[in-house]
Length: 69
Image (cartoon, rainbow, N blue to C red; front, side, top):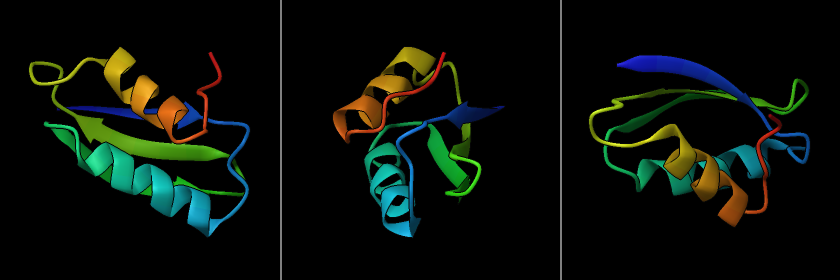
């Protein structure tokens, strides 16, 4: 498993975090750890053998929260 923190400048509240958590939980091998609206970050754990980081970032972008690179 790999832990990563992703920055998403459009996160503004707990509802944003819940939307991201729901989208990411639908992906195989992804475990949502926590979100920080003030820091505009989400922390996740994922299995790179089951899902690519690009897929995770794409799921966040599909929800309206593009990842800062």
